[in-house]
Image (cartoon, rainbow, N blue to C red; front, side, top):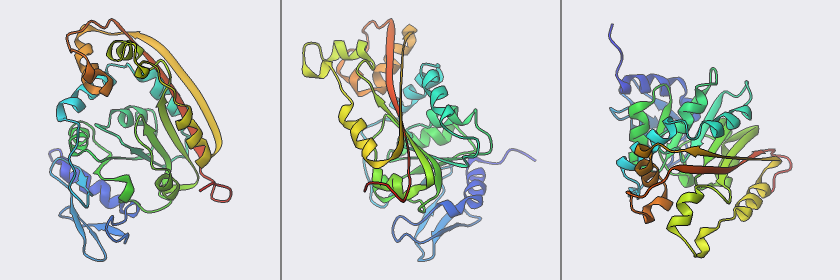
Length: 283
């Protein structure tokens, strides 16, 4: 018997874990039929695409990010540039965590590489960009990939042990709704020297040459208990062929000529970890 198609594999995976989902239109529970239709009790329906993802967007949207950008992002992440970050993030995920949601997952490489060292975990990635999710589904199997908006997400409350939010906008009310009791949010935000070699060239002698995440950190702390913060910083050599890929994947690089010389790059990030406790959370 040959290998099943991406769509068939996604249908089986979503059928097995259909209880994670609720209709983004009416919030009713959802089932998955043999034909790949994801239906709620009020007959709202979404289709698992042949590429192996499902589009839960209620209203059409256009993305500022291209397929080429996500391909470049995949190449950069799989080069190992962010391996130290992913390794540190993984240590905050306990062995009894069963469900992980990556919000703003892009093309899915962070989620793929983090889950490679975890056992028996159901991994779900969501992004508003169809181009990002199409790329994720193209390369990474055994995960549920969803096009969707966190402001109107297709998930039941208290469905996830872990929510990842890596260099992406947050929706803390939705995170709180989706987390199981004592679940964790692991958020990654830039620190002052993140990609400083690009920032210095793109914004020389302007206020954007420097960056502070203080307000972002304080807002995170307002929403979650048992707060932890770990800074990870290192400088890596950058192979010449990776330079245009890095410039394409980060908005900082959009201000620069792709022909510039960039021999090294600094990764400087804060990992924020918070638990959701329904008894004492600030709303």
